[in-house]
Length: 388
Image 1 (cartoon, rainbow, N blue to C red):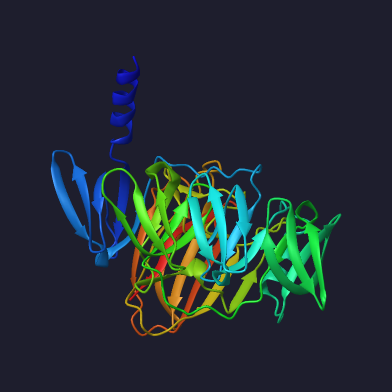
Image 2 (cartoon, rainbow, N blue to C red):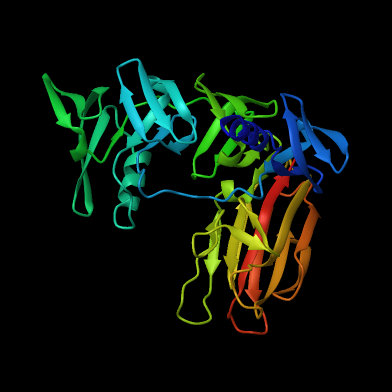
């Protein structure tokens, strides 16, 4: 019986994950992932094996893997390169930080590569305060504490961290702070270099890890983080592998230089990045998308972009989460010239946009009211990106 179980488990682990690969030129291909190295990705499609160059690959999506964030593991770590991911345990000294997570395994990170650690659970009352502290400027480490719905901090120098205590130096005093009383730590760090990652790994836990290399040989992924740490990931832990750095610019990575919003009724529907109005993924025709914009009528987004892009590509439609009565008018302009205009209805299949934006500096998107006032006017621009 034991041998039979081992054989069955081995066969289960050996099943090649199903993936969808999107290329820079637009079309997507599906298949079972066989291997991945620094130059190519190999898929099994029906009875044939096909190879695709990573230089032309935008992302690799795992459609059967769903995001599953856990409220029971609020401990979250951020690195200076922008990586952020939840972990279950953490200890540190002045040189390195050891973390262990369900999806990341055990990692040894240089302390100087860690920008912040959050021990407490975020909620709507303190989220803005935490982000403000993260984006603030200080020449010392911050020990952040929570008092009801308010965050306060003490500046100093963080030392070692154990399961129970945090060593903290303030002036000439050394204090062993009860870790349970600390909401988070924000380290004083010099700005990181702008070296783009080879791959950005989106985990189903909501984590994001920037890697300088990643390979897959048939059982698990092996990655080298930009911090130098090495990690292994099983296929079920990955939602998406993003190879777009240096090739494209997603609109959700840009801030519009101007936003104009005109509600039809009193309800306010602000545009959102990489998620729908309810906080879930963008969904069109039964398919989920990790990147894109949610835009409600009547919204005008105006961007100032570099004149280095050739195409704007996106998949456009009314989000699946609303009844089939959404109706909007969409107009996209480049340097004042109309690149696209037309109506979008819930009953329409998703529209694939491929617009010539050569020489465009001023880029704007207008989502206007259709024939149903503003009812269910929840437009998704999935995978909205500018391509070099």
